[in-house]
Length: 113
Image 1 (cartoon, rainbow, N blue to C red):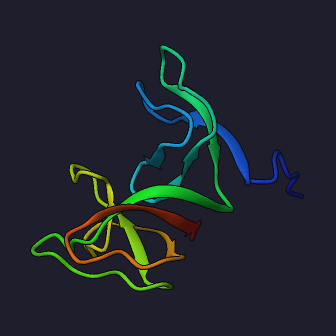
Image 2: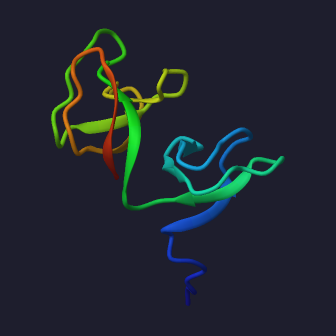
């Protein structure tokens, strides 16, 4: 028999040293969310796994500038600035709730995947 240990919506995890509340986070190669607090000295913090957040997203696909339409998939790409964009070699992070002009970095609502 399995027992639920948490709802999975907010989890305590190693989110990364230097992460602050509101930062997009990836753990491993697939677990994504938003930092709910500033990580402690060991990088431990609370990760929100559901909802819609105002996040910085760049209209870039990893090779060239690309416009983002409402509903487009947003990916987390380690090493990119900002880490959220439409580069399909990244990890699916969520869905754009507003448009981003090609090449622009804009703060928009993103619904977590």
